[in-house]
Amino acid sequence: MKHSIDTLQKDIESFAITGNDTLEEFRLTHLVRKGSIANLFKQLKDVSPDERRAVGQLLNALKTAAEEKYEDAKARLASSAASSGKRLIDLTLPGRTQFPGSEHPVQKVLGDMKQIFAAMGFSIETGPELECGTYNFDKLNFPPDHPARDMQDTFFIRIGGEHDDDVLLRTHTSPVQIRVMLDKKPPIRVICPGKVYRNEAISSRSYCVFHQLEGLYIDTHVSFADLKATIYSFARQMFGPDVQLRFRPSFFPFTEPSAEVDVTCYLCNGKGCKVCKQSGWLEILGCGMVHPNVLRDCGIDSEKYSGYAFGMGVDRTALLRYKIDDIRLLFENDIRMLDQFMQ
Ligand code: 2NL
Image 1 (cartoon, rainbow, N blue to C red):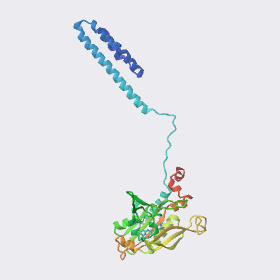
Image 2: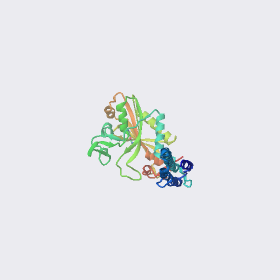
Image 3: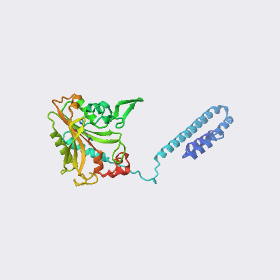
Image 4: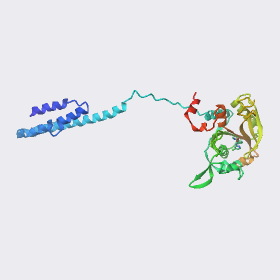
């Protein structure tokens, strides 16, 4: 009997469990009710009573060892199956293409504008796109009945189910400059770039979102001559050293006097073409001396300080520079358009 146990123990120890088939073979050979171990237990009754206890202990130890070997092998096979699944590489798959991305044409133009003004000492300020009517209109000297305050022209925001006419998507970046004036003492020299929103009829030339860059300079003795010099310097760097400028009188509620500025058409050099409608001029910005009411309402003494401000659209310059014929292309983010701006 002891010899049989020894032989079986060697068999069990040397049994190589290499996969699920041999694992099952091991179980069927040794662990089932009619297997090798159970078979030896049956022979226990033939062992003499004084040896039976010791032989029984040997058999029990062998049974435990066989069960452990089985469970260990089972766990090992399960975990190696899981990790080899992770490591499996299908070499027939196509490679993964990298899309490095590119700077949006609007951001390229905006970047050039920011750089020119930063070199002249302007710092860059940003603010919220969701504004209150006070900063977007009232503090900019808009009269209460101004058409820009109309529901048809501006996106007012409904809050808590009630129409609240004091929260809106900003229609220009001027409220950022209002925030700067309320926050800081002159001298102030900032540019404010960003998205603005107007409820336009959408077409190839106008969209409900577009980009603006506004500028503000407030100090003692700031004059219209300072404004002109700054705009001239900007235009020459932006559109070329030979560009000519034309200041036309205009009106904005927040500046007095006000002007609109044209540059010689940089597509036809002022000769006249389809884009400038044969005039030879392109309108690039609006500007003026900050209205004393605006300074007063922002807590700045208009007897002591004066300032100029200007505002320009960014998208139109991007369309002209890159010969894009539909403004909507700037907002659809179609890869076929964007990847043409990859260097
Ligand atoms: C345009 C005209 C302009 C301003 C913007 C401004 C801001 C403050 C005070 C006074 Cl806080 N003015 N901004 C001034 C004149 C013109 O924009 O045609 N923009 C596209």
